[in-house]
Length: 266
Length: 336
Image 1 (cartoon, rainbow over the protein chains, first blue to last red):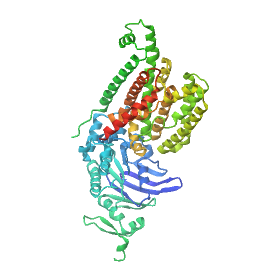
Image 2 (cartoon, each protein chain N blue to C red; image 1 turned 30 degrees about the horizontal axis):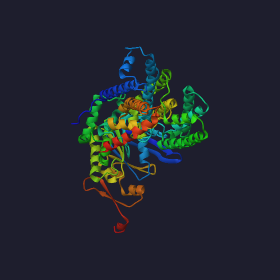
Image 3 (cartoon, helix red, strand yellow; image 1 turned 120 degrees about the vertical axis):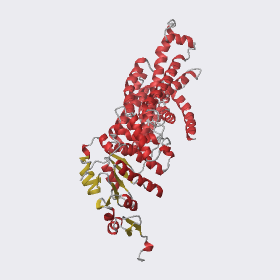
């Protein structure tokens, strides 16, 4: 299979604390791949290993069929872009300047952008629908707008794979859908492989081609959304009672939380 | 459609050229004014060698004022660039070039030098330089290994070392009774009156390569502002860049301080002023800090020399007296 990301028996620990335990999975190219799992299950660590922030300690990690440690720093940055969980920039860059920074792994020795780089940044801004905000300062934007800037910055990096760590966390409902739609368009129109960590299993069910459920550093289940999002696996992972049925929107599962007061009512 | 900003290189050239013109202008002014009350005309004629009659004036201009103006420009450039780098490295807009205890270490070194009766150059300069490099090594060792990349560890070590040094300085001052006390206080407030061309030349030879190295790392500095992890995913070798910037800047500031004492405030205020005017891109800010910082220092030195009827005010006093209100004014204006 032609895989964008190939993880085999990957383990990672911080001191004594084993966070990832013998994880294996594959992300096909041009896939919308979403990682779900409870807090502290190792999702963020996994993303940081794949993005090259942490070195894999044990096991194999291949990006586009090439071991990650065989990439040069800048070559890796041209292959994978990362949108981390929380970003705070204390210095007043404009949206355009911020997006343009995505060109860094392409710049020559002087580190100055050329007209071609400006054009790619403009296109990334247009793709994310932020033409009107291009010259606004970053700290004048709302959380959802900032998130789009960081995504545009990643697009500007012209990667084959984009990794996102909970891009919809703390966004309102409309913005959650906008961000997910944007990622879907990115996959369909630009052919970029999207791998994302999400807390929202319903959003994941609606958008993902494949899901990976991790729990306590293990892979609990992986596959199509209706294979992963079952009552059994979810209860095992999250340890709470959930109701899983089919979404009224189509052939994918819908997960409903069941609060204590509704239990035993059937 | 988005308006294309002027291409960076063009912007860089224009800004650098304008700031360079301003710097040259104030340096020129710095050479012409002084307590001898010679007319502007005579001074200009002497500078351009039109009338070489007045040998005294010739000596004053080329042996005293010119090295001093050059020294001021170098000191201002190094200190404001130092501030800029530390603000980016620690992602803290309040960082300043003395943050790693460089000032404290240098001051102890200098005071010991003065107390031992060394001459200002090279004696006191060397003891000051030794003092600051010793504190730097101490701090890097304290926050060694992984933690060198953690900004809080570095920041707190620096603050603590400076606090300890301050106590030692106070102790040394309280033990000193004679005229050396005046020398110590003057050194602590920053003093640009030292210097012949050879000494200024040595300082320039130390600083210029540092300026170029920092400029070369200015784009990675932009990326560092987004956090070390994200910068890493954008192809920056974080450890190498951080350590290089840290060591280069500390070395640069130590060399500067050992020449002129503790000139405060330039390193805190100039990067901010320039950031308010030109935006946060370090590829613009690095040359702007070198030229703008130099300009500010030369202006402050002119005031320090000309304001009092007799003698002069320490340069550090002027830099803070002008810098603080100016900074608050610009901050207020930009907040609107």
